[in-house]
Image (tube, rainbow, N blue to C red; front, side, top):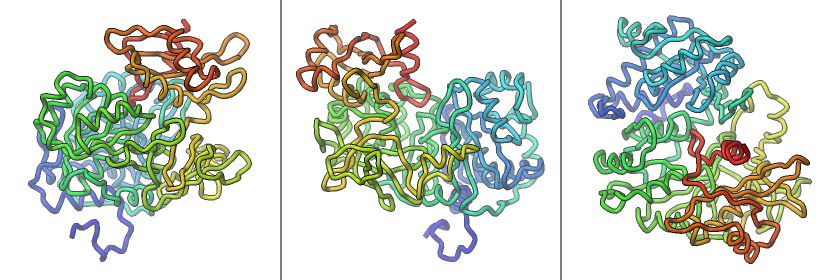
Length: 514
């Protein structure tokens, strides 16, 4: 029995301590393979975390402090997060795609004590140093702008240490986006995160070998923690490139990876997919945005019974899951299911007046679970709006069927209000993807000078096709009615994505209306 399951524990132990316990069990085994090919043993990673944690403590970091992490998919970035949490500090990860000015405002908002920077983020760090509100900066390795904190830590012996924290202490403030202003900071507690990691992922491998080819600042970091807690290992890539991902799966014998649907489609469309040995792959987790049923069927045919669809939110973590035998389940108008609630999670669907709706009737999805956020950082009014009586109001429109399967129609706030009613982009996207000339698409609203919204669709045509506006309008009108027919269709070579891999509708609006 591993240490994290020991019944003799009396003090609450954080996820970081549990990870380090597992590393101590077999110090010689390989646990991290970097993007450059360096293999790091469990003992080496554990020693680096303890040394860095001790160095941060010597510099006054402790319980209640906030550490900013300007880090990439690096072993140093992973160790820095564990070390900061060991001291009792909470972390704020500043991910790629945020402007330097937004990062600076976030750091000022959270009263950051230190900012740690790895070797992939030096350029942004130099920009940040010119802005107000940025705390003292330390580099994880040599740099020309800050002290090397790893070198300082290496001058001291390894000393296991951990500041006691309670399950209600924050381990992280997560910022989910924002290019202007300060986005919402989501407070996640040690207790909820530790509980969420205790649920073993079906089919992830025994032991799991997880490929992080999307940012560790987001869900890939959670999967990396889960793999290490289960005695597994992590392989890092700096970013997603489909040919490189396929080669890495074959070479490193990957058992599990995480992809947003647009990235999964790029993997399926790569010419090397059919000739690559993917036999080690036992789980591909996907989610974060709506998936096209036709492409998921294609993925199942190409990859086998390894697909697990996840539905969740930063405010509530994982809510529901579909397994390989549930990919074909659809609801009314062909909506694919996002699965049933994972153990410990309750889901209800309510009308605007709080009435719980009958199966099959769309309304707002509410979630109650032991994994939900503490609230939004310094935004009590927004916290009260979203988190009421223990229920997270997700802002998603969906419905449950008689068997407890959940179907998501769209986001309430992404609903396009047109003359005559409402258009849910996800519904229209799912319909357009059934057209033989549409390979990928995303739907969004654009306001005119009178603030009326109009439905636009950006479409990546299938090779050799060039669908017209009239053709797609007729297709939609015949199947869903004139209300949903797009008023404009833009043929594009690719759908631009945000740094977390979701369609960048803000950028599309800017490009197509300039």
